[in-house]
Length: 280
Ligand code: ADP
Ligand code: MG
Image (tube, rainbow, N blue to C red; front, side, top):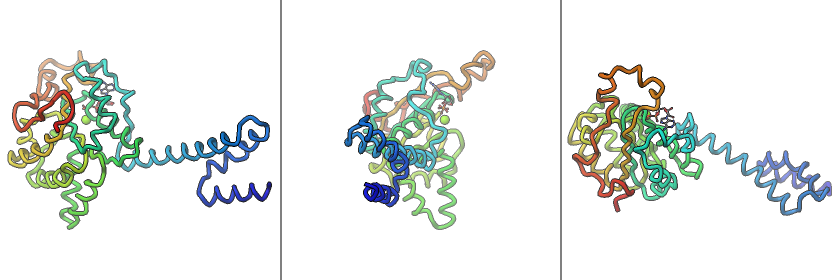
């Protein structure tokens, strides 16, 4: 018996199962008193170890994916954004769009929850074991620019192309140079029909020529980013400012950043089915 137990302990150490090793004595006592059956003992030890590992895996993956601070769909108050169809978000949370390498666009004014929803879907994907990476457009372009300068552009694009979901946040806030737009285009091209993306923007697609400083690159980008795409437009008020709406002067409230962007239909190649998921 002692030999047997020593062997089990040795195996748990060798297999790097510290949590199961820790739980072993307690489990054995429960077995002896008949509190649990043998099969429950095996299940208990393995579940303990597995849960610990999953928690650690998710922690590490969320950090490397740049998904901190964590946001969840449970933490999103849909009542605050009545223009948002909860069912469509729930459908996205099934994560089939990742398998289908689709593009999800969240459009809307600042503070309407675009980054929150994008992050929450990323967190759900990490929990489901998918590889995710999140960055703002400015961060992506700055990293690509530096990589190009150092002769590592292909390598950097391969890195960004590897994640099964790439989240590109904050398109439209900062002006992009033509060189930057070209680099982003190369990345989008590398992922095209291979990997899913979530993009968030406060600007309508009609304004992308201006956002990317070049209508030709913007058109080429939209061509890829609106094929197999889901467009979710949020029309509501800023959640950040919800407690202070009365403090914001009327002329600021009426100004462009708080007003919704123009509807995506106006130009470019909008997806055929704007309300019901992907265009296949
Ligand atoms: P956006 O990216 O559209 O500018 P964020 O997603 O960053 O907006 O939202 C701003 C802040 O408000 C974040 O802390 C976010 O978690 C929170 N938030 C926004 N909308 C909601 C909501 N409907 N329910 C709960 N929290 C929200
Ligand atoms: Mg945001």
